[in-house]
Length: 457
Ligand code: NDP
Image 1 (cartoon, rainbow, N blue to C red):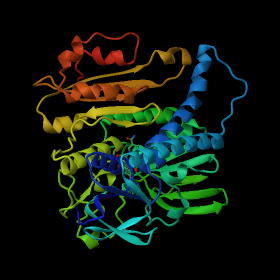
Image 2: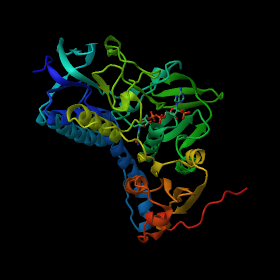
Image 3: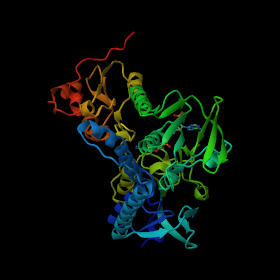
Image 4: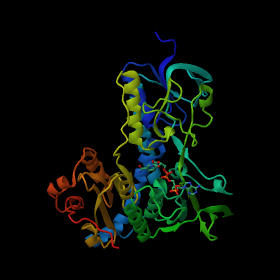
């Protein structure tokens, strides 16, 4: 019999925490889970899932226009933000219920409470005013949107957390940032009919991606009428009247807007958790430092997901949670494999990418071959849309292995999920070439690229 109340106590019931807790419970551990907000975490409650609903909603904004070329007409089009949010909330409630049920069915105790550490085996449940003890503790508290508090008036802006519950859609939005959330929400707002201006401090948006991807997304966003201002930052934000704000930029200009949307990154949620009481080491960004088995600097305390600031993606947190449970509760030491993780940005059109960007591959391999194509998809011939598709393969010229694939265009995320299987398994360019095309699709272009791309001198 263990001397503790629990074999495992998990703090944070998001993707990673829930996966780890359920598996550990299935392996016979006595598990407690504390969640201060809602079971499901960022992904389900105020991240990937509700965001994707907003993406679907905004795609109809373009879809109705495109349908005209196919003979459709509608005299009265209107959009009801409140209805969308209500429907989205109903679905999120349903998913939240499923997550709670799954945890309970696995035998875990759920505590609706903020939890902090008193020492390396003691968790304080604030809502209950009591302590519980556990042999192992898993920190899975995720991250939270960060805003730049050095900017006067920064609190006049909202973050992605607020965007899911706006009372009404603003007429004009200024988005700060050039990463995933900035790009996705800029496209969402535009598709729903807002005027959008995106302000990015660097040279071009999505800078972690292949340069062709950044350039393509930038040009597609511009084509839709999203204004993108680069190489400048917010200097201060001023309230003009009830409904409008003025954003002063460091380049000396200003933009008047109805809503300022911060998307300048997320920070690991470790503040005020008492991790220092237990001796857990954090890095500069506040992330829990862990080894390859997700173990922190303290023998019995582990951490998975965004709170560790490794790869901040839901499926990665789920895998890390599963590997933790296998290692600690199934006597099956397991490490997460971070290679060839497929990624998507749900911009419009979306991005799907896996493996090396061209610049990364050129850095690591001697001979790199590039295959790429850029075309208007068949659907747009009748719709009249000028939207273009980019497809790019990065190939090791010595071994013929496909090292990376980057797509911007309709269905890019769906295509990349399937391609990631082959690319992770080591598929060669020759095997792409030997695969018969499926006609007429956008994806067929992936197996018909024959000419190596040679940059113009
Ligand atoms: P990102 O790291 O993607 O982007 C942050 C952006 O903010 C960057 O463009 C960065 O610029 C800019 N920035 C940072 N600090 C400042 C500053 N002080 N002033 C002005 N700009 C600044 O973060 P997100 O918040 O967009 O997303 C967080 C994470 O969540 C992502 O990394 C991703 O892992 C995950 N996510 C995944 C999604 C998906 O899978 N589709 C969707 C949404 C989020 P710079 O480039 O110069 O550093």
